[in-house]
Length: 325
Image 1 (cartoon, rainbow, N blue to C red):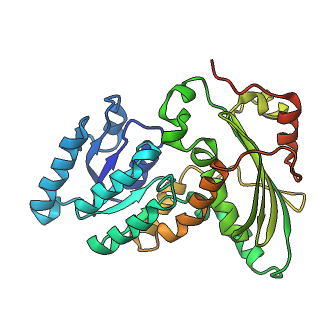
Image 2 (image 1 turned 90 degrees about the vertical axis):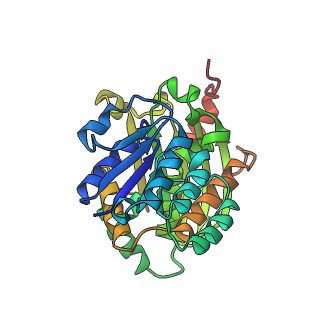
């Protein structure tokens, strides 16, 4: 059994990590968050130490490190805001623990270089959560793509709409300096998935990019991809609205819909299982999507360029407002 610590306990994604730690037969011994609305921990690890001051949390990890070997923290799970990941990873390494960090590992690709050096210095590992890579339907699809002729280009349309309320824009997620914007905070899952499935990007066009939605075109080694991301409920298709669904995800490959709407509830647990076996996703796995999201974030949108996603065309045509009041 391994000892875990966790940063960002009050955040949206933390319960999936708590469940994964419990499901894999391990224990949480310490957690930190500046907010104290963390009663959910009672469902999992009521005896875990909790801190609202990060300095006290760090000191506690150091104390455990210097105490009895069975008390030492083995892994720090990082669920904090994106801009803090780099710092919290370094905390884990100083505590002589591995880091298991939510996406994205960092906002800027050059920060990965220092983390690689620190991995070697501390002789510890930095892992990340790339949960779509363990989705059964996508594993099956990757096997099919890998066996297809090397020069074959698949035609892909990716749509992901996940409604967010006004709170989103007033939280760290709505601050591009902290979250990287929707292409990093929301899109990083899918950019990683696309690169994993179809190979590295050769061309990247951005047609639309603002606080609510983004769209563009990617030329990958084995695919031409039109993509669209949105956090605006007005972009949901009528069928989703009628069923009162706030999320819509669709991937068509060569005009064939890929069904993978289910099977998401235990993906974090699967990643934990593989990581604890030594098969986790590391810095080299995360780097291509972080680089791509960074490039998209710093590319000036040009709606005149071709190969627009249909939903991007609609958004541009309707001149949808992007100002949050």
